[in-house]
Length: 406
Image (cartoon, rainbow, N blue to C red):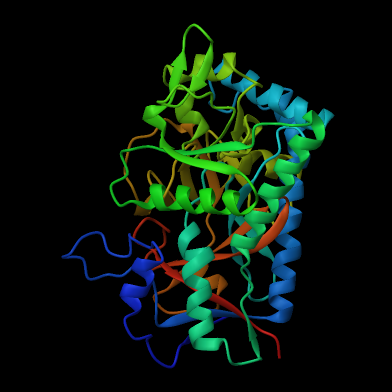
């Protein structure tokens, strides 16, 4: 894996990515640090790419294999309220009984790759509400076409948009096959409180892929979902029933508000994407569970709940943290990076620290993390973010990925 410069910037590239709905390249008009990295790409060899694909799909298998034990309560309730844990368990039971029920859509593994032995190491799994969709599926593609489209040595390895369309079609056809005629109306929802617009454009991209797959789609806000107390169902503001909904809103947050009881009551007549069983994979408890089940696995990193045990150099991660929030890096008892927030240890996972700079052979000033998209259990592309510091947070840059065939 090499970080290489492109020959020149595209004319009006900032306008291009804005028109592609990458509306969060800069935080505000005074911001000079671009999120989108126009000038560099990460280049994999064909062998490196094939190796990553195989290992990422192995990580997905490890996660799926763990769910039976998780659902049985072997590892407790994972920080979830008991009613939501039971909902996730029922959702998984339905999927286990019939794989065409409670089908999932997508997720994103965040990994690093050891340049010496090629092993992919799991840092975390964004199984419920992963973003960086627009830059992965759209901007990365047009960037490749401009800079490398005429060079047969290179290919664009990310097919996230096509994979989402294919998966939505699988889900739609499976529902039709199970029930005969079904209402193929899909609501796509995110919250109104979306400072930089990322949730809205990400949700609308998902909406577009579903529409391309034959669904009738409607965009709405989570706050506008109505529960009809007489008919005991979810409705939109026009009074139409919501039978299928994609929500870019975490399950653990649904479990904390008044919405939770209605969600449980209407299961399974309301189909949610992601399905409720994804709760089992969207907590960082998963990192410790995978290590407990597969100690020494080459794709896993030692991780524990509640304490670092024998780890001396580790990363403390809040169970439900996102975008680097609450992460702290500790070396021999001293905090060397991160957020000094006072989290209860029982609400954290402690994972052995691996320096991405070292893993990538001493790349000065850059710490890249490979986001690997998984759609319907299959690898679907890259979302690489690089940071100047040790923690990949919301200031990290998105850098396109390409593959050199020969």
